[in-house]
Image 1 (cartoon, one colour):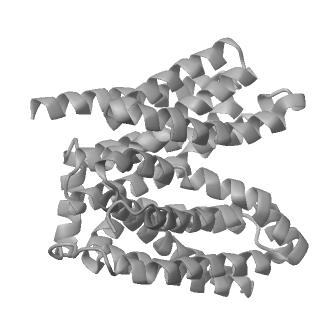
Image 2 (image 1 turned 90 degrees about the vertical axis):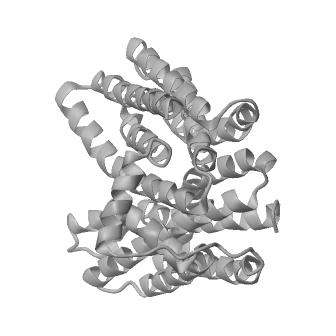
Length: 384
């Protein structure tokens, strides 16, 4: 099974299912008021509760996945996600729907920790950069699929049909992957799990310049990506607004899968990420000098594409063992959810107080933070 592209593509497909757990609510958010007319601000929790689980339990999920075993954890999470989506298709009362979203957050975490770890183990050295760059596109691709296909399905056939289709998708990948994952080699010893080990693992992860570097860099990236796509549109010329905003995620994915993959053949993933942060910072300076210039927006999306795929590729490059890779993926899940949760509110607050110029200044500072972090951590690794 080592080097099997069909298996790695199936694991990527499972990741799309996990990203759809976010996207399926986001793309129909404006329709949920008709289902829950008294929901009010509580409807916002239908989106954010999944991210909240990731912030609190990202590293804990990594420990549990390693203990349960990556294959069993992934398959269990896919089946759990399918059952949850079936429950959501019944459109239960809002408190029950929130509880289902909470459970869905657990399914999401297990998939995004286990799947990239398995991909890194299956891929050969020559394949790993491309395979993990592909994995890095799972959020963007899932949101595009849900925007183009999921929302129209919900509008024409009803919201329950969207949830039912997601349940079938998750179950389909669980069925496909089950016999194929059994052929993988054994995963080594089972780690301990206790309160003391949870605290010790957190300390070990964030004290390590190898395990924590991808995740801490990912925090700066996720702080910017969704927030920029959310707050930028009002500042764009209405004549090109839809085209620019629809193109930015696609440009990011395209650069990650072409230029990013080529660069990973000749330089380390950390260097590619560092270059991505540096170029993103320069693009924000461009957007400060020429506000909301469409070409600068597309260039920014391309620069962020370098960060996107190479951040996941950095995990196995910096960490040799499956346990360390799982911990690094857990930190990426934890920091990614923190960045996604904080980015848009902080950016929106700054814009309301100081106007457009706060966008390039705040995002530019975040990109500079990611650049400095990776440079400093690389210096630490060289010394040790």
